[in-house]
Length: 217
Image 1 (tube, rainbow, N blue to C red):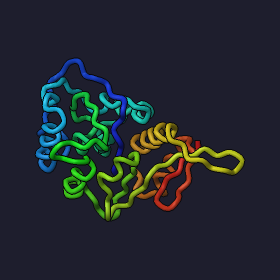
Image 2 (cartoon, rainbow, N blue to C red):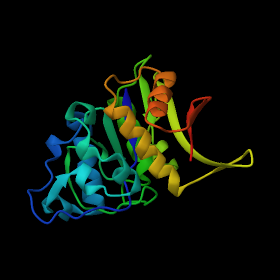
Image 3 (cartoon, one colour):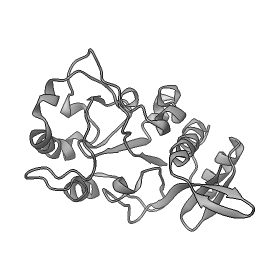
Image 4 (cartoon, one colour):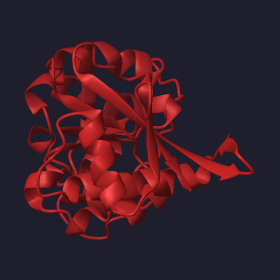
């Protein structure tokens, strides 16, 4: 199983600590050259800024509900966090505070989604039979989409008088709850049915619907 997360708009700013080590980030061999280009176009001074684990830098609703610091280290390695600046990072990758919205157009780079897509398509695992649980928001889903693996996206709805309505803010919290349940499970799910069973065991009300895990809140 692989869990895909978006970054969060809310970010903590590390006050101390060494700078980012590009060679120490996830998939460095494939992505370092691209990261250097985006850094140069966006803000080269970030190379010297204090850095901390991504799990501590990202502080939005999803990350608060997920609580990556409490997730076992082995399970954290199943998480990839998408970013307009870094492409993807793992929770333990050390990064500085930054603010780069995914639709920002950078000189020589253009839109981050189009820039990162070829590199991520080549670098990220995409194996038939593997379950990929997608918690990303719309802007980041266009960075990469697996073609062979089983993709299960997570949505959230409210239900009143038999009518369902999609929710946005609560979707982040619900995705955090689902991610925590899956990553803390004794055995990672291998298919959507297994993911749904784990979420239900954690007390969530969920339904499977054509490639989606719908959470009813």
